[in-house]
Amino acid sequence: MNESITQIKDTTGNPAPLGLLGFGMTTVLLNLHNAGFYELNSMVLAMGICYGGAAQIIAGIMEWRKSNTFAATAFISYGFFWLSLVTLIVLAKLGWGAPSDETAMAAYLAIWGVFTAVMFVGTLRLNLALQVVFGSLAILFFLLAIADFTGASAGFKHATGYEGIFCGLSAMYAGLAQVLNELFGKSVLPLGPVPIKK
Image (cartoon, rainbow, N blue to C red):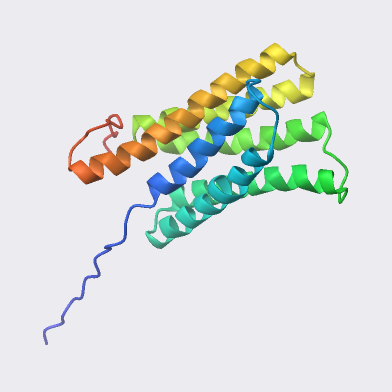
């Protein structure tokens, strides 16, 4: 008896650029604040809720549907990171919770640094562009944690902000490169070599 096999082709778009741009653009804007260009304001908080938060979560769910565990974990986690960061600021402003002191913030940032460092190991199976994004993000989290834990100088915090701007720009590059490379059908913006998987 002949058995027919039905193959289902995935015709949905690549959600990774949405997630990378949601993360990258929001990270740049927050770290312009950290670098001392402006105070923390509603623009940063709105980006944290809408683009850094909601858009990344949507991208992560789309990656889950594509069976991409790494991207789903990354985008959904960092989407909720942004929502949690905005929430801890707003809860304190509304008087619904005690403001987080420097030690609490250092612990919060350090645990995200540990998570990101392990995710960075995963990017060693991906491309160079993502290695730069996750590597610089892990460094950013640890620098921010050190700044809060030690009560570092304004100069150290501003320098950390510049490192964060680099991280955000690297994520924007990775996202926009995927969009342009797909549109043009060639490597317009290179993502770097992909290791041979054994």
